[in-house]
Image (cartoon, rainbow over all chains, first blue to last red; front, side, top):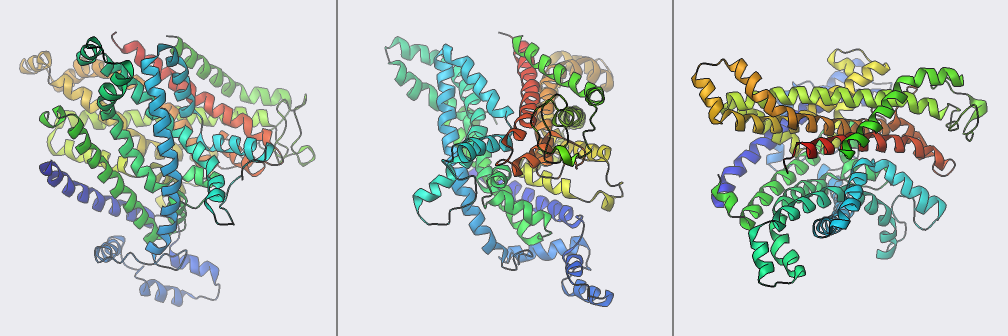
Length: 314
Length: 277
């Protein structure tokens, strides 16, 4: 296990460095730099002022040199200031990260629980297979933004039970929960399909294994066979999906955050990228990439712990 | 087989509707892009079977012209991703070594990034900065196809690499190579047939993904630009009006869901057909 960690960590570090460079260059190719935006805001700025400001902020340097200056700052723990908010980028990041962790944490926990339950039902009860299949198809085919709009129309506009979006004015867990119901439901439905499909396929495969027949022959009850014998073995492929979703925890859900007007990483990332906020965008992107890569590593390690055959196969 | 047939039927219906769009618009006597401020948000009538939107444009006509965009983008993006992915996967499997390592790390890197914010970043890039012409519905379509292909090739590349490696390692292929069969012929005679089945499944899934991605970008205002219609930008307008005209959100979303479900059913049906029971 340690050998694998020692082998993969440098690879992860190299991937992140290359990604940061690629992202820096892509953002650099966007129309307009911070100074040209300042120019538009203040018509009194002359050509000489523009040149002076470009030089002051290092924007006259080539992109590669700017990336290097930025990267060495990050290594010293200096993430720079956000251009849009005029505050340290890390300070802006925290509230959005908290919002996304709450929203996606709740939605993914719900999606995984319901999805795994539905997948197990489909594998164990043949009559449930067609409905679960249809549910998974619907959950993948419905665009999240449309689902969100439909839920708003039904529960906020027609019935008036829940708020259409935004964040609560009054503090309190109950009020915060009311604002979370619709976005969490939208996201959970969208993520449910992957868990249901993979659980159903993996369970069906495991249930054909000889040791399941042996357990049945010994007279183990079906519930014990499903939960104690089959599920842990079927969980191996599920860990890969969990790892990918761990990345989503941090990258947020742009669509759901947009439709329900909630603060979160998806919107922060997009606003930063579109608003030419290099420092904020890069910090957020790197956080997401690092989380995803580390979660994949963790999933690989957990899969080896659950299924020692994987470690021998290498 | 029922899945495959159902999926193909849905896609065929949508394609027919997309092709017939100009005739339907002419028959109704409406132009999908021209506002009619005297007939804003009218309900269904003989002149406008699905009513009109907030600028008085016929919803049915916009829906049909939107189908052209969505289906064209879906098909073109899927073809482009499959072509790039196939080339990358074959190259990685065939050359191995550092070519393989480089391509696969590139694929890992793309998978580790949050896809949607990056799609947004690429979609917001100024085409003029790259020396491309700006504006026009056709350039919008090409731009989106290109952006989707940049992300879409990864899955196909991994799939074709795995399939090609397994074929190239088989005894009959190694025997053929030992007999002096040319590499091109090896690829054509042995690798290509083994790839056909998984690629058709991956290709139909790519169509579903591309339709969904295009509608998402257009919904966020970065895809097809108004006045040209697309299912995504119709929904963006509809969301602003949920309180006054909730019905406007119904049709475009239903169309997206039908197209995506159709392509997924085709993929599912093809996969089941290929499985040896």
